[in-house]
Length: 322
Image (cartoon, rainbow, N blue to C red):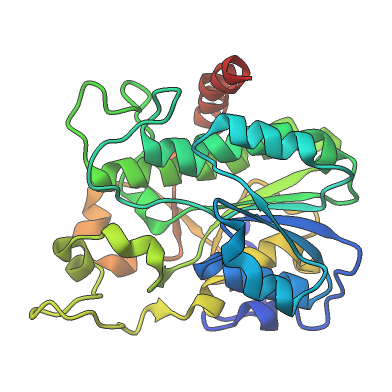
């Protein structure tokens, strides 16, 4: 299959992606839209006329965006709490044109679990979004050309999904492995949606925003920051050439969420505003340098059998929590 290309380069901003695109009348949910990449995603979508719902644990943080874009709203949502997800879905009314699964946590230093016993990074980054998408399936189906976008990370190239012990119950907890596994799961979520909901007209794609200095990275330790080229030998934070601004990092997200260029495209993975190259994943990619985690997607993340298996693993959990 030929990789899809777009006219946008690595440094294009979210606003530039949507220049000339009119999203008036379209309703879009952005999880984690009150900070970091989510904020820039909301700015671009709302600036193009979309009515954006910011789903966030603390709606008060979204006030600057609500002031700047009067049609925007903020609604409480805690993705680690399936009761909160269910309440959010129950309160939603009308069609939904796009769901942007942007929120997440990264490299929690100690193992934590949610009420269902799921490791917290997998619970927040994947399970909460899985439950949210399922709860809003009818709203997506009711829209014209609906889309789902899941945010992953180049970290998914290093670690696949461990179906034998996904919750780190029988192996030592590793912050990076847990994060990377959750990001593989996010890609598999988009693949699963593209396979199961295609007849409903729903398309789903995933993307990596690239490396950006945001609060998401607050738990990163010195070895990881140095491996990413974001810390010098003296322990000072630096911004290497391959890092982006938050507005540049949000570009691929809005490309998938709203650009006419992506009409009908589904089940694919993008970075730097282009479809990524399929490669064999593994720890050797990290060892060879951070540039190997860019513009590539691991075969295990686009594996349809793994997507189906993960869907079947998670579905009973959200039903039991209802």
